[in-house]
Image (cartoon, rainbow, N blue to C red; front, top):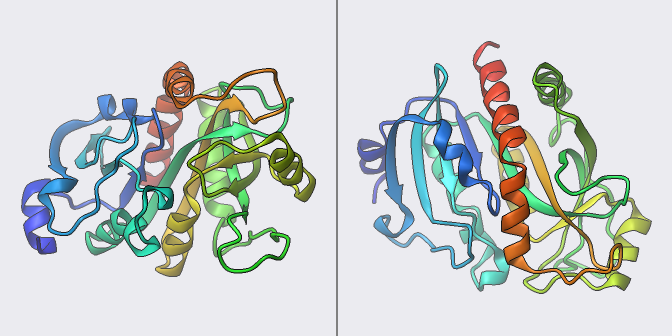
Amino acid sequence: MLINKINDILKFNGDTGIVLGSGLDHIVKLLKNKYTLPYHNIDSFPQSSVDGHKGEFISGKIGNNQVLLARGRLHYYEGIELEQVIMPIKIFYKLGIKNIIITNSSGSLRLKNSTGSLMLIDGHYDCTFLSDEAVPELIDGESYYNKEMIALALLSAKKTNIDLLLGKYCWMLGPAYETPAEIQFLRSIGGDAVGMSTLPEIEYAKKIGMKIIVISALTNFAAGLKNEVLKHEDVLSNAKKIESNFSKLVEKIIDQIGSK
């Protein structure tokens, strides 16, 4: 399906897109004047197979600002190529999006950062070892996490009375949860949250010059920090508990972007 055919359905003319993480699609309730396009209606578009990722684009208004949601993330562990994982971001770019809010549900690597918290990501580690076997190095800086967008997100949190943490995200391949030994390693290199997504989207968004905000919803403690068995259904359940703060924060960020 050509991009003009896609937009005949979505009727999108804004500049902000949002990628929704596991269990975080309750933000759809904020949208007015919605238009929906399922991924399976787009030729050769990969399909998400993970619970909590419906697989559709939704355009609509949050306040006075039109946004485009990718409701259904694609994961490398689903057996698709990295070029396919970033397909939603490619669609965003072709539709003129300049600002992107990437969200995910993550495991907290620090007991001080409790489940139910929201964390703004200002640096990341690629811990997949796909490219080499070296100890992962911190990737940060203006081209990924520019000061303007971080300040905007922190101001939005202040205005909504939300305690927004700041930390570093570690990407692991999945789909199995990490072992306690792996978690200790991630902590030792400086990680604060861990998940199985997000970095391919960050890397591509940076490559094409988008302004990026990344928000992690801490839905569980990582393996070994608590005497708990990690299950995906618990992640979805805990994400729902964050619904109110997450929605308020994203709504305010959209408002702040629109008023720039």
